[in-house]
Length: 274
DNA sequence: AATGGCCTGGTG
DNA sequence: CACCAGGCCATT
Image (cartoon, rainbow, N blue to C red; front, top):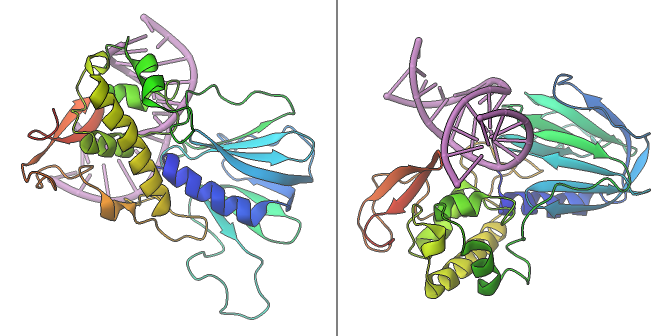
């Protein structure tokens, strides 16, 4: 379930590895769901960047390739196979199960798009085509308590649902929403507009904190998420509430509860989150 | 603003 | 066998 920190980790690693490479071929294995490029290849990649939870590859000439991993999508980079046997990255076998598509580069390396649940997308956009409209990036300078208050004060939805709304704030998913609410000591079911100024300040700071920490730890691996070399993130070691139903709160030692908020499992401490 | 559908693998 | 995971989109 890649969220902002997982996507940011992948984007940084991809940027390092594929910028300057030329896509010579795009193989589609899941013909029902993956669309072929609407532009002619070869195309050189000039940048890889994050847009909310989208991965955007800028191509020379202005076109873009936009990837969304949804829940189980993975981008795995397969370097050029060396001449000597046994030196290839053992974590990345040549043929991946559930491989839906692959970008082939002119130097012989390739980027595999693997997705068990087939929710993930690869879209090709011509020069000038717009990217999806999203809300404020929570790691940007403009994400302040004041901005959050302005966005949220009229909302009557539960704060958890508000945090997951990509049109309001782009990049937070189920895990980091629960983690941020725990740090800010706010219940996921609280009405957004009922939050007081100190609570908003705490929440904004908690969101930045958990996202930054997530990036620092290379993301949160529960089961599917992997970095482009096949290795795992380790933010799950810093996890306070997500998926910890029945366990003790790390702050007050009360028992962690699970409730449904907006149809999503939400974990929180009954005692210290108000 | 709330709900259902898209998917498949894992679990009870 | 039923149910759950869950981001996003279409529909109400």
